[in-house]
Image (cartoon, rainbow, N blue to C red; front, side, top):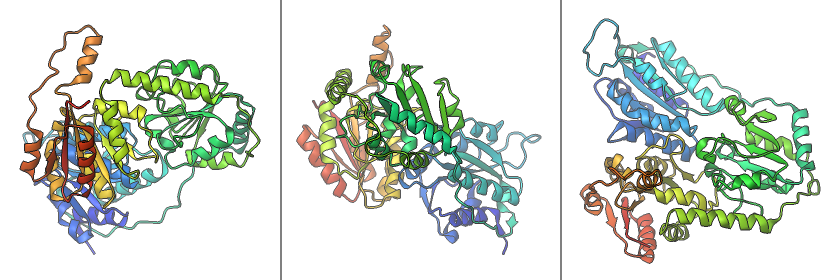
Amino acid sequence: MERPTGVQISRFLKAQGVQYVFGIPGVHNQELYRGIEEAGLIHILARHEQGAGFMADGYARASGKPGIVYVITGPGICNVLTALGQSYSDSIPILAISSCLDETAYRRGQLHQMLDQERAAGSVCEWSETAQNYKAAYGLLDRAFTEFSDKRCRPKHIQVPIKLLERNAPDFKISAKPSASLSYNENEIIKISQLIKNSKKPIFIVGGGAKDADVFKLIEKTGAACFTSFTGRGLIPSNYPLLMGSSLARPDTVGVLSKSDLLVVLGSELAEVDIWRYNLGHKCTLVRVDTDPEVLSDHHKAEFKVNMKVADFVEASLKHFNEQDSKPTWDAKFISQKRKEWISQAKREFPGVANVIKAVEEIVPQETVIYSDMTQFAYLAKEIWDMEKPNHWHHPYGFGTLGYALPAAIGGCIARPNMPTLAIAGDYGFQYTIQELGTAVELQLNLPILIWDNHKLKAIEDSMIAAQISPNSVQALNPDFCKLAESYGARSTKPSNLNELQNDITEAFAAKTPTIIHITDMV
């Protein structure tokens, strides 16, 4: 039967397995909301489109499913761009669906009009397209979900003219698609496996792109030393004696990498935010495995470029290894000593923070998924907190947005009901999306929200001082976070020592509403 196109879009999403839509309704996109309940979708109302985008991002990271956002023409799409930019940077599958004006070339001064909405969204999405008819709407939706399954995930944007949303469209058809797998050259796998076997000092670097692969099974058989990127934490057991941790950005890791005779990088961009230098510093053969051809052709100039999923590479490679194949000569004591040095360096950069991190690490359940903001607590924790499970700490890498933690954690709670989720934000960044506390209270989420309050933009102040700039505009008036929480109907605490902090976190996980835990002046 025919239904308005806006209704059909919601029905199409449901047919693709979508359960939740994040967003804010408006007069321009209200037709998208006509069919939400009929389709069986649940809409999560954000307080700001940026928050809606972060919620969808957090949901996608925790669930493994695409996050969906509904926004209005003009300011709605502009407000969500920051979140979409973060999702692009971190390879998160987000589909933003917006309304758009029917005509903009001749008529000016319309409500929510902007010069080029499609191109604006295209600046932070893999693609941004306009559906001029229902066939195009269905085709673009189908294309988005196909690409989410078959290639590196990036956010997409589809905009639909208001009149088309209102106009009836026939039912859609969704054809079953075979799961795609990138082909590979078996001879190349054999050659790489032989290189690893012949290597005396191989090093693996494991990134977030390997999160679905059992990479340790391969690394253990090779006897290689390894680093993880920040997003790769948890993929290698913390007690593996040849694990060098997530300290790849430490300058003197160059010295260790230069000792290697083979470097294998699995699912990592080796981006600036991974290594904080232009080159790794290695002098040996480099093997890259990634689903993104752009990564394989970057300035690191890998000798072997394998365009396939890390899980497929691991499975194909394991066939060529026996337990006694490799005899690397890495000294576990040397690696342990270097790792201690790097952790010590990190702790000295953030005095007084390590003890608090340790207290939090000790008390949170192992299955906790953590969402952090751009704050000193997270900067240090990324190096000294060994995750026991992969894909359980999410941080706004790359794009580096403020205000990420709270709304993303809300999305994470929705994706994993009755499972522990934790948000960590700084006092300044928290205020970017503080209004989303209302959404968390409405949903009755048992979400602890740690606010690391050092009374200023401390990382920026430190950077200015290091650059011999007199610190300017690094302090701002903070609200009373506890009273603010209570005004929303949330719980709040302000622990004075580490024991109180641990008790407050435990109680927050058991509460029936979110809890702000205001951490300040604690050593």
